[in-house]
Image 1 (spheres, helix red, strand yellow):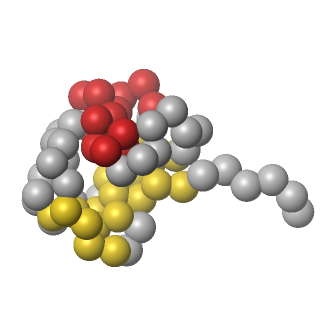
Image 2 (image 1 turned 180 degrees about the horizontal axis):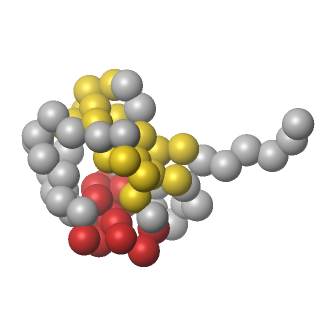
Length: 65
């Protein structure tokens, strides 16, 4: 299935967001996620099914000022 990850097209196998994050090597990383511009809390990632062409944004927190 093709998705857009942070603006770049990617091919993935997993359809469930939490599993897709593992496939994309985010594993246990602390990240914020959005699917098609809608924020998805970590607690809901296992309930979100990705579809072909979905836009997934994954952002890691930054420190500093």
